Image 1: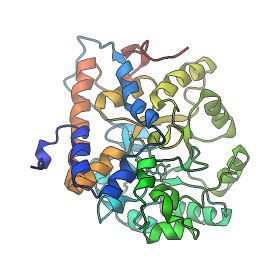
Image 2: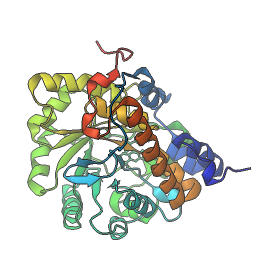
Image 3: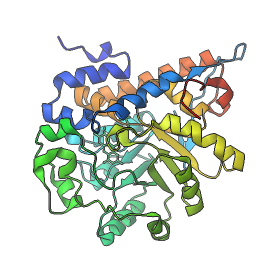
Length: 368
Ligand code: FNR
């Protein structure tokens, strides 16, 4: 028998249920990683190489998980990252994530390739709820400019340009499932030329510009007042270059292991990046986010100890939404809050600002 929602006690439980209830093509698209999925597995297991050095005898009666991301106050330092094709998992699509994010006061990053239209997702927000836009850059810059200007007009508070996908990775599970129904919003955003024979990912990505380069960054800075961040940076040299280019942040990410297999995990890259930035006195020049494999509040805490502003979480909310709709997303977020409150207590920190590198032992990471 299928577990009821109350029997899901952690984020992995939602994945197990989703695997059983989702359509095969949808499961294949959400769950797949590139090639041998080594990076996808490493994303989570890298967190297992970091251990805590908790403080004791600290007053942890009251715990405050709140923090600020790109100027927006949130209740807990994670955001719902951009994942395409929400209606594969649930007929209502991304607006369910919007409502869940609202309830828990966290930020939603809207994907360029959402199943709902951009306006539907913005219309679903309430009050001063914060949304960001994830951008795939079109070969036709006029289209990209229109998308960016529209997002700014509709109140998006951050523009995350995906830089790790000049070509979509080979996700063989997805390719085998010969997915075909890409939906109308995706047709609109992606334009013509949709090749349906090689899975969902490839079907929707033909418009992405593989010629995108550092030379384009000044243009992006000139067309919007939204903070610009680069999503998918994977080495310290590029973080430095991003700072020099004048962007406001980076997401250390390998796209959930869906692009370059054998890319390192975001958390490992973070451990390499922060000491270099601190040496230059640049640690506050930009905001650094990490995504990939975050499944436990201890993962969030580890990333913050190492210097991340917050983490992005992708698949778990897709699975929760696919298995149980909004109540699933709600419970998944609540579980993370409960886990984080408890674990903050156990490592001896009452506030997010207190998290620092002395609280973790990273000797298990393969840093040189
Ligand atoms: C993604 N991701 C992604 N990223 C992006 O910039 N644009 C996109 O359209 C998508 N689409 C997408 C679909 C699906 C099904 C997944 C699982 C992921 C990557 C995403 O933003 C993020 O980097 C990873 O999902 C983080 O890893 P976890 O949390 O899924 O392990």
